Image (cartoon, rainbow, N blue to C red; front, side):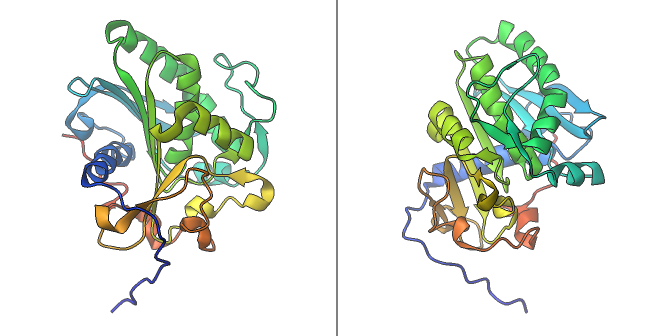
Length: 274
C-alpha cells in the first residue's frame, strides 16, 4: 500500500463546485491536445489543428457555439525536442515577431525555450483566429494547456489579449512551470487578473522546477488541489501574488513527480475527442 501523501493544510478558501467543474471542463481540452487527431475536442467543433515541426509543438483551435468561445489548446512535453527546449532557463525579452515587434515593456522577460515554442505557431494561430472572429465577433478566447502546454497557454493568452484587446481572454493551465520574471507575472496579472486559472496537483514539482533564484515568478491565482481524491473541498484558492508560500510554493520541487501526470482525477494525456 502506498503511503498517504501528507501536505500542509493551508488556511485558504476552498473553491466552489461550479469552479471545480469549470476547471475539469477546460482540462479536457488541454488533455486532448496530446492526441494527433481529435475530431471533436471535448465534444465541440474542431476549427483547425496547428503544428510546428521545428519545435515539435502541436495544438488545435476549437469552437464552442453554446458558450461562444474559441479555445486554443497547446500540447505539453511529448518528445526529446520539447525537453531540450524546456531546459533552456535563460530569460529573454517577451517578443512575438510579426505580432509584438518590440516588448511592451523592456523589463518583461520569459523563458527562452517557451517563447521559441510559442513563436513557431503564433502567427498561424493568430491567422486562424482572425478568420473566426470575422464571423464570431462576440466570442471570447480561451487558452489551455498542461505542463509545457500550460506555459505556452500563458504566453498565448497575453499575446492574444494584446492583439485582440476588445475580446475577453481567459487561460487555464495545469501543472505549468513558471513562465517569466516578476515583471512579466505582474503584466499578466494586470491584463488578465482572475481570468488566469493556474492549477497545481498536490506535490507536482513541475510548477516550481524553474527556480525563483534565477528570477522566475508565477503569475496569478493558483488553485491548489491539496489532497486526493479531487474535489472542490480539497482544492484551495491561493493568494493573487502568484507565489503564495502557504500553497505549492511551500514545497521543495521534486521535478516530474507522479502528481504531474494526473490532474483533477484525469490522466493528463487522455483524449476527449468525440
